[in-house]
Structure formats: C-alpha cells, structure tokens
Length: 83
Image (cartoon, rainbow, N blue to C red):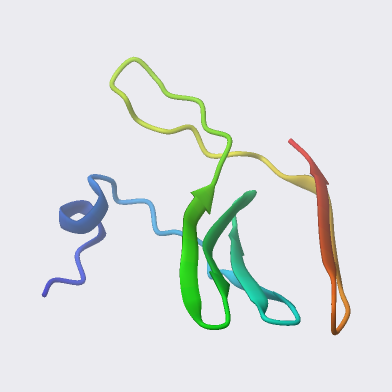
C-alpha cells in the first residue's frame, strides 16, 4: 500500500493526529472538529459525525478551530470549540 497522501485522499494535505476520547466503554477519535471511529466495547458503531462544507470541486474545506477545550474523565468527555 502507498503512503502518498494524494493517492490515498486526493489531496496533499496531511490530516492532524487524532485525539482519542474515552468515556467508559465508549471511545472516539477527535480530528479537525469531527468525531471518527466511534466505538463501544471495541466495536465500531458509527464511522463519523462531521460538519462539512464542500467547494465547487467537491473538496472539503478545513475548519479553522479556535478556543478548543477538551475535557476527559473516566466516564465522560466533552469537546467545545469555535469555528
């Protein structure tokens, strides 16, 4: 398999590293304002929750996140930001 971002995603932009969020058996990866790989007990139950805006070529605009706050406890997490 290739590591070339353009061949994999159609863009040279490399995604940021995800932040793993956990709340008991629930886990999710937070990436660029989106939740991905949402799992319960190690089983993926939802691929993603995302708010996206497309350009005329069907590309996706990247969010400019500000005021990012991530709070995590053993049984809960919360994420807030401005975009």
